[in-house]
Length: 411
Image (cartoon, rainbow, N blue to C red):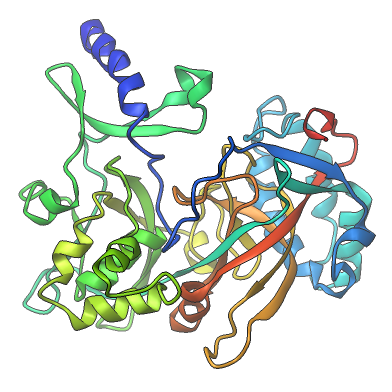
């Protein structure tokens, strides 16, 4: 790119950073209110006896998820940062990863002892607040076709060649974790087409259609979840994964429906939003287009496609054990003890306790804050029933390698 073009782009970064969110898939239906103070991760040393229900968990399942993360961590340079604000480098985690490979994931007691031997728990807070919002997400399944017809006429698009994504942290430390996206025109970085413009044909004629599906509502929720599975008429299926977004601001349309008086804050959920969209086909397109953010996809190939959808760490997610977190504060691959509650699959039944060891393996633009998480519940309708109704308060403990100096975050 000409030097003059680069100068114009860099000059635009500070302006765009103030108005564009992270270019990441959005999963939460209704984000939590903005905190009154600047978010700050604060840690307090704890013991495994402090973790509610620790001895009742099946830690072998968490070890399986941790091993998937270790496969990535062991390939990284020892002096690389794990990400977030946790001090230390990948080297601090390599010993635990190497030891984990010798453990049997079917032996839950041995897995529990492994985590107790190699890790130190820390209670996490946002300033002085030890609870936060925990939501859920899942892998939707859509019906698709390779060629369009009267039934399959909604396109899912691959990443356009002219889409430019910029990590602002490379230019200013104050913007670490923030991204913008756009396209370069005459040396200037301009906003990319929004959802309404793309629905209106802004990408037509570029051969960007990856697959065709039969439901605009299903496609919209795939954009929110970030990944899914497409089942074809011949019985075959392929996993589709997040590739990029257009960089436009995300809007939770649940707020729009509340403002219309259609839904209330108490009953808004993925299920209630979907029900309204499907029962109002004339109004639904305009409501969905209020969310300017648009996601582009790619096929997930190889062995990972058989294991599960791919998270931000590049590993297959494990149902009930993978957690999406805010990467401004936490790196990916960290064991996390979660103490929260979750909806029962039967809406008529009360919530159930959710106390288990998870691993940070994913992220999302709506996941904001040091004590904030999005639980991956798996694939299909049953997983969606739980994920769509999960908006619960909870708390967690980070498990950091013994010997890692986290004193800078302890208060």
